[in-house]
Length: 399
Figure 1 (cartoon, rainbow, N blue to C red):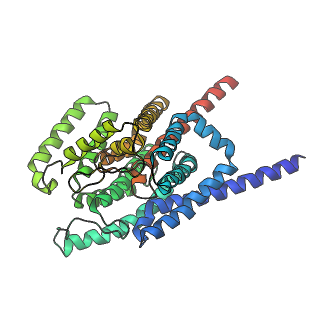
Figure 2 (figure 1 turned 45 degrees about the horizontal axis):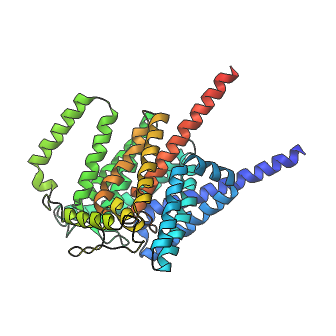
């Protein structure tokens, strides 16, 4: 009897390890395959095979964890449900509603799966995947930057954009900028745990930060300023914060021609946002996933929150904001010191998507690194802190 039970447990653990390994491959593909995928279709196919399929399998296999996860994060679950309902009733094209429903299902299975990988040995497995992804991405970027600084004398031909799948400098800044902040957070975690690889992560951060700077994206500058603000605030040394702010302003002023190579302007964002707000107020319950605004030559509001409002209405928008704020507060209460490190990627993502965001529910692309992977990082951190608290409480009761 005991032998049969041990065999079942061994089989269960083996299947779970295989699925987690498969998910690691999927996470590696999400982080790195934009570099070596020649077409968007190839990239999406790899993500579906490497991440979506094992996410569904591990969700079905470990259904108890799956249910516990969404019960503890019920507000985020309600957001996804409200978004699906809004899309079903508001989107005139059935294909658009079905596409949104498929995307929501992918997220409902995919988010718990990624959190499960991140929570293995306190982000150790995630950091390993991040390291090997960084080696590939940084190697490619270093070759391109070498050409820029040797052949072209430091001046990129046009704005820096080198990946086959990403043919837009703004998307390039989102992708490499998000990865850079992940590397920065990993360096901090490894340094605190007295690991040896934190300088390697810092080097990768510097390489990708330089690549993002060469895209001449002003949104990236704003997002990095937000990351710096969160980092300085985490020290709780407000004198140091004030000094750092003054230095940043001074450097920005003296080197404004080099930093703001495209000038300082809103690039018509104010007009775009005002039109988006007007349409949101006109139809507060949303217009469906195919909603567009028509101002100058743009058809999207260049702001993730406005996009949610225009497409799905004010209810999903409020639920999304409430879920984010609740998650950040839960992470803060669970681990008041560590949560700043988990918060950096989300701060960067919000800073970028405030100026460049489109639909929050999207097929696999660089925006996943800006909002959904950072959300997974916070969820994993909160889960780890909660498990540690529970273990500590149990040990005290035993004594």
